[in-house]
Amino acid sequence: MAQIFKVDSRFDKSLFEGCSCAFGVFDGVHKGHRYLLDAAQATAAADGGASIALTFDIDPDEMFAAGTLKKLLSNADRIDRLAASGVDAVCVLSFTPSFAAEEPLEFLKHTFGDHVPAHLHVGADFAFGARAAGTVDDLRQWAATAGCTVHAHHLVSADGLPISATRIRGLLGRGELDEANKLLGRPYALHETVRKGRQEGRDMGFRTANLVCAPERCVLADGVYAGYAIVDGIRYAAAISNGIAPMFAGKTDANCEVHILDFDGNLYGQAIWVEFVHRLRPMIKFDSVDELIETVMGDIEWTRTHMKVDTAKE
Image (cartoon, rainbow, N blue to C red; front, side, top):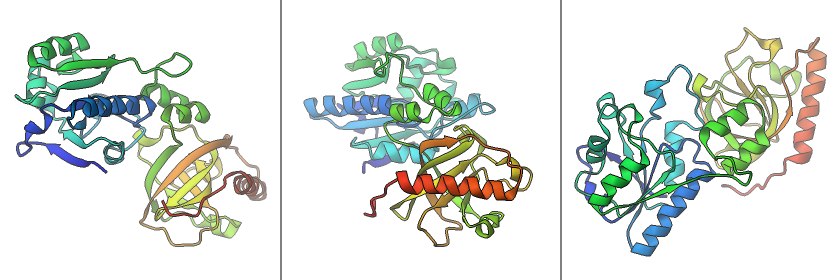
């Protein structure tokens, strides 16, 4: 796990000297992002410098497009995934209104000071500075005078289309989970704290862990999914209802309910990971509780049959 640094007045920017730096927001830390991170590690190994993931403490769109923002990961989980990616360090810039208002060259000076990386790895559409006015060409002009090499990567998948967080969010929103997971390189997941719910599932024969996801984290299309829940580092098969079922509309604010197979502990107040692997069906408006129970039991049985688990602790 790489060390995480907050880039503030106490941060020693000499850490950037001679390093190979992958720079971006990295929402999702998807396959395209990991290509950038791997490229930074490769040039670091060739030059003998450190590899660094440089990112922001928030997604800039939290400031500029908060009303429509959707995110694949929380900020804390995004930074943790970067730290686990194999780089030597993660450096986190505070994205403040004053920083966001800096012109591109001021932005670079603020970020690096006089300590310039040997290599900067960015996406080909990388933009920076006030109004996102800085382009890769501007970055290259600055780098040419600063002694830095800019590597602008076109991040595409096997079908020739871009691997981007925007594309993945669109796929998830349409329920196209398989394709989204291919681009992520892992199952789409939520990391939330279990809250007390209606407790009706217990009477119906299937207890659920109830999660309340913030609007910006409600990316995946409503429906029922098979996947996994990770509790205390142990992976369990799970049948997951994502969204509020029509039968319970107005009765709950839990928008993700997770039936964890072969688990009987108390999870209230505990954060768990929930991974979505297969979409089983859309949300259905049932005519009766009996019909709901029969259908959910079928979802659970499919999950038990198809979602195999390794009981080794992660």
